[in-house]
Length: 111
Length: 113
Image (cartoon, rainbow over all chains, first blue to last red; front, side, top):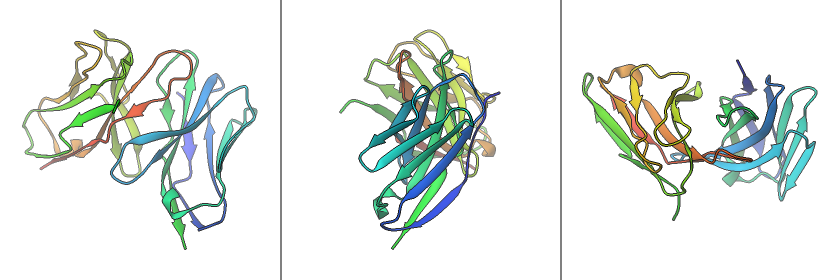
């Protein structure tokens, strides 16, 4: 079946850039999503990218997609302590509305 | 404010007891989902529903049942709770056309003793 892999932890210094990586196996992925989960809350959509795009930028967030390598990344510029959270990568195939989630990457931002 | 409401927020339950977790959405989304979140395991899909009147099994359905009598409500029932069902449970909903990200509730923290 489909699989989505993420590293479990990332630690960065405040003001630096964070890059969270994700790999997936389903070659028919249509949409790829990044969600953010703050402590004690549910997941919230951060951004998404269509599979026919290479890059999407939204303020401090940059999503890069390498479809050939099935690799997705989320770059957060000028990382702030408020960015500390768990970030989930998810992919959705055209034939199903049910996304497959990675296990989440805990981003820790320290002063 | 539009969104997903889950109840209760938290619950401590004795093993063997029956429990229903409630979930209501007001966005008129077709699809609804139940996930459990456990440390190190990420989110695992329990059951889902593509539209009112239909349900399907996810990755970890054993010990859980769902119903979808109408568009807005999607309750999750544990018929006879066991300690391994201690988890945080998230309900979510989405459209089923085009870009359809999930909208999540704030979760129910369930402890089975």
